[in-house]
Image (cartoon, rainbow over all chains, first blue to last red; front, side, top):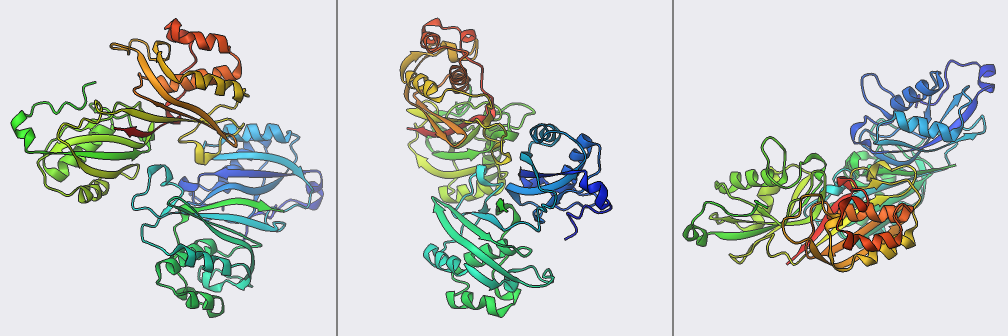
Length: 260
Length: 260
């Protein structure tokens, strides 16, 4: 992950700067994810520009992690260093006045100089949102994955609980996206059915690329019966992406919170 | 209201036709309301075209009432007469395959020949959706009116209850939009606060143009203190639009259900 390194600034100049943490919410429909790219609308790009317009500095902004194109956030954390003396509350107002309505800065506060939005994250909470009815209501279309195939919910609940603990998530990671260890600890993994909505909430100490989307797709296949509970249990040791379920689409994924 | 009259068809040809009732849901952001207009994207226009493509007939479709540009629906009812023998369930599928994703046909069923979606409606249930926090979260921006000014909720609840019963709603109707009587009966009017969301649910036997939006705007002014409870109580007898509150914006309004 390249984002975050406040690159070419010397240690001396950094010390005179404040470190500001932002909490962000966005509807990711129109964005190519967090990470800055040439010629694509990204959240990091948008935020960097807005900060530069306010502070007059070209600051690198560090996110709590990458996010896939089309995914959403209710509470992504990010930080940047600035020499500007603008008060955090004013900064929130100034940023929101420059940003489009589908991206909001919910809060800003000064944090210790060493704080790093990605490295210091203790856990992240994601929600994957599914709609099981035959017809997807339009007010849910931007944030719910429509899955109109009958599923066995108690079976899915059993499988969801088996994600809790420390496991090798190679079978759930995008191929060739694992740099070192694929071991992650899941603190919480629960399914909640609200009418025809099915919400998967997962909290863990870290997530591999596509991990939550692959967990959701695999649970749906367990519910549908195309993956048995026994096969599901063996997926951790198989360490084979092709044995797990499909990658559920990006638009159902919401980053709820990053804990420090 | 012009919509609905299955105009130039003779009584004889009508008798051989089935009468189909549709329940519709839509995100109204992109539409100029229900009623067909030249050169504007409307829901009636869109539905009429889709029905014509399936049945081969140019059928007039009658809605349960007009809706303002930008308002939404979870359960608008409509009916049309057709000589086509297509099964209702197949019709739902065929229509949804032609319609954009922000408009869905939730159900279709054959109803008695005389059924008329507007004239036979016994009551309608609307919800006006407000968000009171300082920053509007992006996932609510399409369907919530952002009102970041402090309001007295118990006072608003008191006022909301006073809408229940039969009243002259001239003060709450768009000027010059009242054709005959402005008397309407409200069966239910309640405010519910969920976190920072404030939901106004209103059920009545009929609604004048802009009536729910004006009721919401007036309640907010009561909550803010710019209209006293006493002045509020006198609004029915005043019969003067200028004495009531502002017209809350269209995008906060959702038609939940039409009862027959």
